[in-house]
Length: 327
Ligand code: SAM
Ligand code: SF4
Image: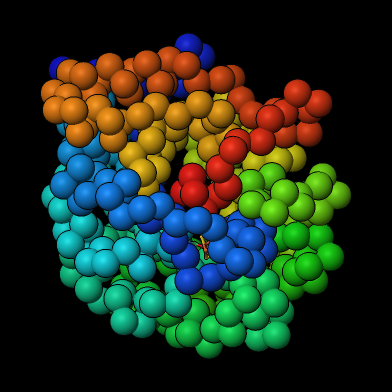
């Protein structure tokens, strides 16, 4: 008998995000400071065996049916395909979020190891702006990485675009066109207050309403009925595919959130914006059995808040930034 992870508001948790490293080869301004962050010491990272054990207990005992690997940049963790192979043996959908810069080398090996779906983050199609936003002059590599993901047959390939007012909001229609031409699903993401520089302010958020209006004026869109997934979906009226918008700030979807998170250093989180973490690494390394791991999961999920309070006076930013939590 499975023991679903249900919180005090009746939300059943099915979706696990695993950060495999806090390191990254890029420096996206909305995520990481230009000088980088202090990386975790190697011994603090969960091993592949520890990650697999946590995932297995969550899938087998608690009915988690979707796992996404993220970071930091997950593809710079050595031997990532090996971990993918271990996790793909579990009965859960397995996907990856990456900045795409290493996909030409890795896409085939990841697919062979059992990875099913991939999201590539890309915030500008202009080389100069891409370099300014990531502090790396690697737009051609990322575009080639997206091609590699398509060639290998990941379906769908999604492209994540964080839209920031005054930075890249003039490229929304270019991204829509890019998605239609390449046959990839573009997902526009509202800028969230999880940047290490703490430069976020409400004015810099380009809202779902503004994003959809910009595209609809050129390529008319129809709304698709909402599910528990974070993205609101819209289809092109002419059958040219679809887009998604993750409106975490202006239309928060906490009521239907079914996500839990494991950080690279083995902390279990019940929300992206959680202030508290639950120390799974200590439990794993002190010989906890599955029932003791279950006690950590159930305690953490029971403590989940109704939702985040971005924009409210009592909102408290998490101490760690997006790349450290695992976006
Ligand atoms: N390095 C990988 C990548 O960039 O896809 C995976 C980790 S990254 C933290 C995961 C996702 O979080 C990316 O799509 C990124 O654009 C998004 N992200 C990072 N900081 C964000 C912020 N402050 N607001 C909204 N999305 C953010
Ligand atoms: Fe790295 Fe991804 Fe953060 Fe960019 S968004 S700095 S690629 S972790």
